[in-house]
Image 1 (cartoon, rainbow, N blue to C red):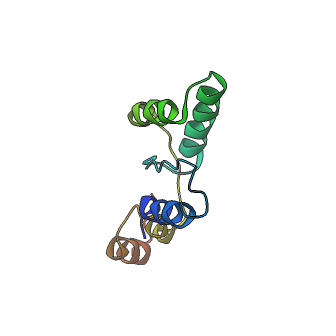
Image 2 (cartoon, rainbow, N blue to C red; image 1 turned 135 degrees about the vertical axis):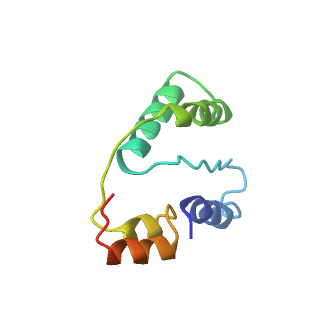
Image 3 (tube, rainbow, N blue to C red; image 1 turned 60 degrees about the vertical axis):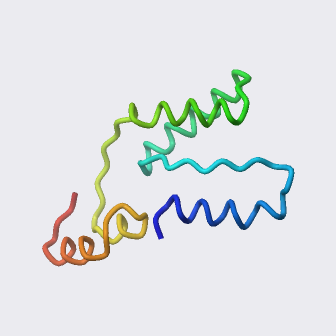
Length: 99
């Protein structure tokens, strides 16, 4: 299941328990340090007094401007995170590709 789908599933599961809470799901298009950068920015936007909707909109604007590099030992991690297909993960792992 792709990361955003999992997050949306979690949001859908929590909504009935917290009917008066607004839950916004954002696909960060990144992982690891990149996601940490976006979370740090979201906290700063909140501290600056932006509403949840304003924070989400600003983060959406920030996403294309976040550049980070990382490596993984095997493509299965990227598949579990929804970033590559199962075929790509299997073939890449068989060939020893380490992006």
